[in-house]
Length: 255
Image (cartoon, rainbow, N blue to C red; front, side):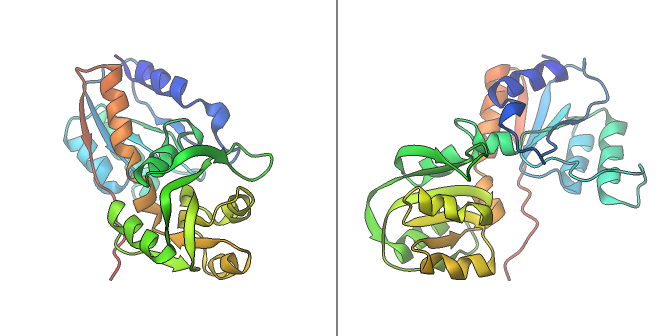
């Protein structure tokens, strides 16, 4: 299987039609589309450590959730972080591909995995009007106190800490991995008692309970990292001969 064939295989499962208009995922670095893929490195983010591991470790592809190129690169110079990573990958002939908001929205993607980890049932997609619905909302097996759910989420996601705003019993839960501040109103409209996301924002967290919905922040990384194992499984399903490694990338420390 070549780099181009692997990309098309994944794009069939996560089509660009599901991506947000502002997103810039896809194939961001591809020195040789026809290169045979023998080794794939999977990570949530393409950090400098990931780029170095891919180049030094003889990988053919880096597959991430977050894209390397969000803003325009104006010069390929080693003094800047993103160009430096591009240079590292290109020199080693390593391709970089990412599936971002389309992986959030797709069936079996980031938010279906997050809902499954919480044991939700009767899961439905939700989101702001006129947008591809990335979020998921469903029912807990039984009602539980918001504080107990927060502790459960912290343990289940291996989060260094969680932030809860609101109290009371929770049965219907909405989830969105990553940045969820713009989804609070949609979660409330979907009938959720509590909305879990990676980051929601200080003022939005304060407003939530006053608008009838408890809010829970568990960290951008913690809410999205579980998808890496799924990406690794997809690569193996595409070609069982490909060696796949998942590399942790959380560079933020809660002190």
